[in-house]
Image (cartoon, rainbow, N blue to C red; front, side, top):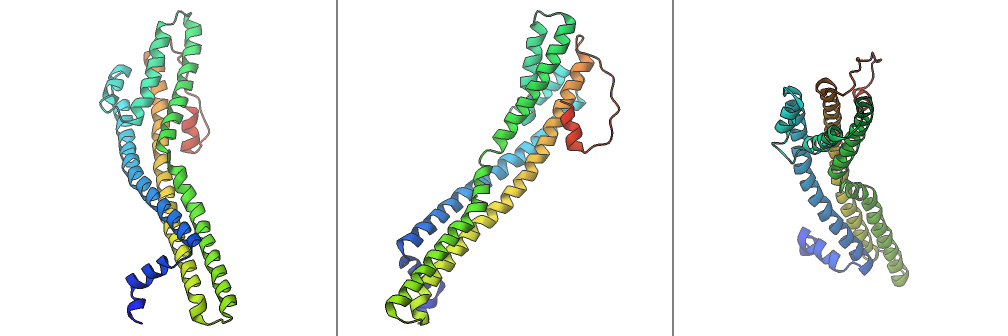
Length: 251
């Protein structure tokens, strides 16, 4: 009796005797858990690196003497999101330098093009960084219900056993209830880490987004200061606003 209640023997024997439906539910949950933890470890490395690189390159860009030196400093690490954003904007600037346009028209068209390029580049980088995070959100939302399905199925099996044996004794209902509880526990075991990791990574993404938006604004400021045909607009007085909203207006 005591041997059957040991953690290894009891749980393994119970899982082996589970119904095919409950086994399938558990296999789905285990597969989602493995995929979720793989994404967590990968994103923990990539997002932490991207956050450090974005903060460092944004500082280097601000401290450089001119735009070319700033791009040379940022290009030392081509894996940085700031480098990807700055490179696309710098290439667009070079194309506009070579465009056969009147100075006034070039000034208007170039700044609009560079602003659009910066927006698209920031959006592309954020899209790459948030890739696979939707799977964590899916695990966080769906796995409790998948586990609940196993729970319901186990309880149905228990009631079926009661009907066949015409007895409500614990021995008749315990196997189905055990299957139900294990399915629920596995579902929660997948959902809780996925939820915590998803919210944690969203904080990283927001920080990187702020760095990229600040980098974009600094890039436009350098163009207006250093490029001869760029419009020289005086700074506008603005009402105090949240840093996120204010930074978006810069580009």
